[in-house]
Length: 482
Image (cartoon, rainbow, N blue to C red; front, side, top):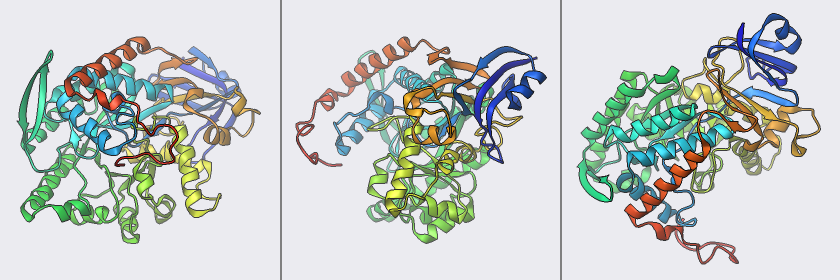
């Protein structure tokens, strides 16, 4: 007696042989897949407590988002497109204007967005940029993890110290009464250890903790005096050692030309490292990624991918693992991984002026099996195989933009969007069916997000960043810094 039997769908397994099973079925018991095959075979072999009819639906592994930011969901589009104002919002909201209630509300909102889009696993950095981390007090990470847990998706929360100099000023709030306090590197590291002890591997391993340290780029090396640079290097090594000691994924945001070589020289890389963006890499850096086993999170919809190009085909051809990230849920992009798969294909085909680059199946691998590998979960998620976790989504193919009912792997990659996801299962638990979320009250989540956003605006005085820019209409280029 299985707990769940999904029948009659087009099963896109993403297993080692990349089987596509027409009129396929999946049997689930507990949190694991126990059988995969045709509907005829599985209905003969299994009875089930719950049966889901997947006719006219694609049955796929849950999608994996290799890079995103906690907090961004409550400051979407602030600054009206100006990068300098956006970063001001991140800095003030995350270090000064946020409370544990803010982080709980944002975590539920972002996890609900992922759930509705069929993203069952994602990375979330606890802050914005590569150096605005809310690691002054474990209460903020606690609230974030509680929010994700309530929705039921799988998440890898990345925490770590900020870039020197320290101390950095943070604030706590009692109502509207603000208390500022300095936060040292040692305090941030102690906070990280506490969070790891409390949360890593909890809730059936749906919650994991990753360790990060700010990326050291050319502009930092050039701007820092010798003592500050030496301290930056020391702190990076301390954080990296903690990740190795605890067996955590190590991640860094904002890599670009020369920063990968610098990280390699410092001894930060390895098969447990996940480097985000990785734009304009040199040929030597591509080789370094392949040789060290460091994984790359490519974010084709991000601003960083406008300013430089991540050499995805070159990295893959060299033997490196590249997964796909949203860099979401703001300032101008969502957590819809279908959107980012399509963006990825067009981005690199435009670069090469060659439509043969990155066939849809290769991009689908980037946000399933390769995403799982990049997050250290390569044997657990990312494919529909016996023994793997039952993280499964059903995509409704009975829609005008996805019909006729043929070539399903092409249709879901080229034409689908997150709103076509009908059913989501994580760890064998049915979280959404028929587009109805079962794990949380959506209205409550939205109301909490609105309330916490309004309170943050009051605390920070950033309400003016919601104003409509004068150049919103009628201009071919917006003004201001980007």
